[in-house]
Length: 396
Image (cartoon, rainbow, N blue to C red; front, side):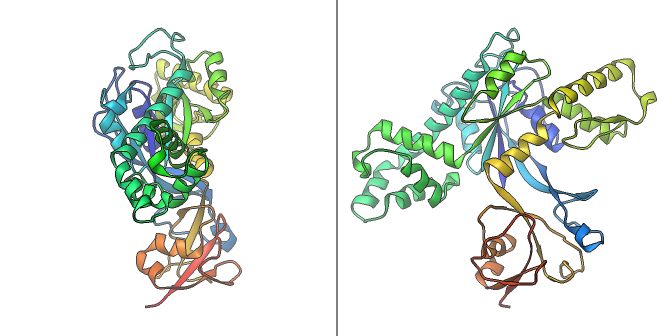
């Protein structure tokens, strides 16, 4: 599963990416620092069930730290977006194409109002951050519209001559963007227009594209640079009715994680505090910086980076964590590792969905599933719950 980091140039996207993943990314205070997309892995947190067994787990794909599983999520940091990017301005076409497989987007907004529409540095407070939210929504909708229009004659022909359902014809056209049949159907239901695509206007197609963006590329707003942003800007962004908004300071999170990695402080991702371990290894400027970040954590409760990622995964995408095992009694795999893997699945997924997530052969040859806690036999359509421990039985 992939989460995209988006926004105009010079708002802290690459800093956010580095803070969330500790992967290297070029960072500078001028537009278009990022040319090629940066890819890395971040994590969302879930309670590990190993305490129920009274023994330690042996994680494979998701580390466990003090009873908390860190479940991996792919993260993509793409080039900055400027007005009319869907027409090719800036690096727009490349930016948009990089987002095809992203399931959710985190829109990094300069809450300080210190960068204009092009990403150039201006006086703090002089640019309206609300306009950035609207402009990016508009750009992505127009991008989706342009893809729809390129194949619209084929869609009309499939519906009119071949008798294919509207949603199926559109979904076939949009497969490369990760839109499912359900997403397309939901988007169509939100429209009040003629059901025959041949009669649709350009405005109808744009309205469908806007619905597809809302349903298929849900977005959370990171009100970045909250440490230097005017309070009224944060309040303005938080007043958005249709967006989850999280104040963030990517620079502070990156500094704290690097300090923790160097054993200068004790700090866990998402915490509201840290502890200095080696004050002798810090100079006066560094101590002053840590004091500033300590006050930031007290004000906002965290740097917001981890909260953003988890809101995107657990709220926007409504994911749950499931633990597949081969032995439902010992909760182990074939090598005896306890609770080796943790998988993210959409809420509402069933036992067979999990089988396919683990391996295509398991899904194709699915016989039954077994609940590791109750030992109940489960059918293919049994809906999974967050934290379930499941054994899949399949034909050899």
